Image (cartoon, rainbow, N blue to C red; front, side, top):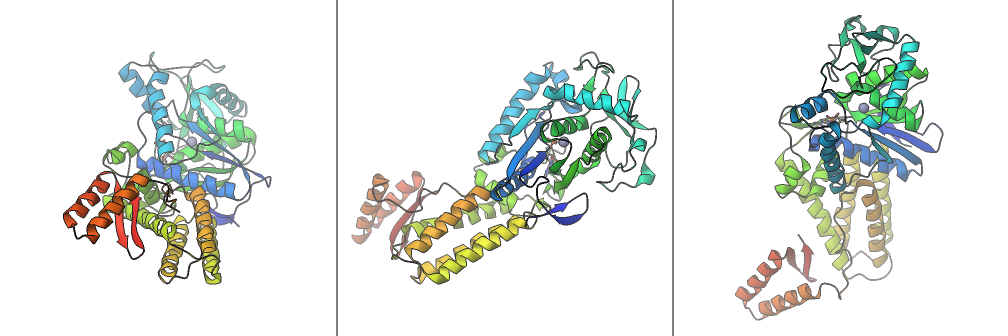
Length: 468
Ligand code: AMP
Ligand code: ZN
């Protein structure tokens, strides 16, 4: 049974899709005014692990993500640069998809920009105006929070702080400013983009887009809505208010919020300048898989402090997995199976699933992998592993790969001697040089292999190699 921590109730709850078959899931996407940083990616990666885990349960999934291609920051920058919204946001949207592919984030079923959903947003504003939940002030339309008695329940807002009658225009603001928020903004400057609407030309506030897009594709009630903790207030509280006031139905059953990636104790943020993009790190020679590994190594509801040491440790952990495959693939095994190992594999599988079922405890899932590696290495050393055990382990790792997507390409699992003839013959020449005690020659060949990205290791069973 999958249990998820629901921000709305503050408790772990058993999860099943409302209709028993299809999970309707919405995740807030990027604001495309800049490149995403690895803090943003931490959030998209936990959502990706969730997505993969839900699919493994045999449920169908409709996963929707918006691209915020209109908001205060985008308008400001595009006006400064003198380009239209589309030309300004398109490269950042493309870069986002590229980063997702590099770090193996599966594409949601529907990923779509806010500016293509203006009519849906206008329809919600009209409903809210009709119901008395919204009002006009200086040509803009605001949501009247005093009309929605449960306003702020997601963030457990202290109702005494409500600033009744006060209004806020900014897309982003703090919990100390719980005022009527803007649904539709009248242009203040002639260069601002605008759309015609029955209640006057303008453009949507940020919160409105997620309600409109989520309900268009998923219906009035979603199973899961994800984001990071900074989305809880005001963004998600506002989404609840405007959606439920429009439909009179519960908007979301499970709210999930990931904790932040920190740098020296502070949130990694574009505005603070303390961020790394994926490209920055790849250019410095870091492996995107090590970055993904690092970002899932701590469960999503815990803060994670980014350091280069922890990134190196993540790389080393991946190397341990690679080395294990290398050894497993190269081992000469006898046919049959060892019942003790079969039990170990079953135990690892169970620990892995139970970990992910426990509110996506990825640390526990990784622990299951390393436990199996440890035990299997012992079995290999003691000559207790058989061919069928190896096949079982490899099969399970394929499943692990489907779920976590952290494993390197496994070209070295079981080596076919016909492969990579050139490398094998270099290794053969080196071994001959060593037998003849021509150590300068053997070192030279080792270096030559290293320059080609091949690492060799001498073991009792012979010389093994792998790509760096
Ligand atoms: P933005 O493009 O600023 O709207 O952010 C995209 C997503 O990344 C949102 O869900 C944010 O809450 C999330 N996010 C922003 N900064 C961090 C961080 N340091 N760690 C984790 N998630 C973050
Ligand atoms: Zn959103």
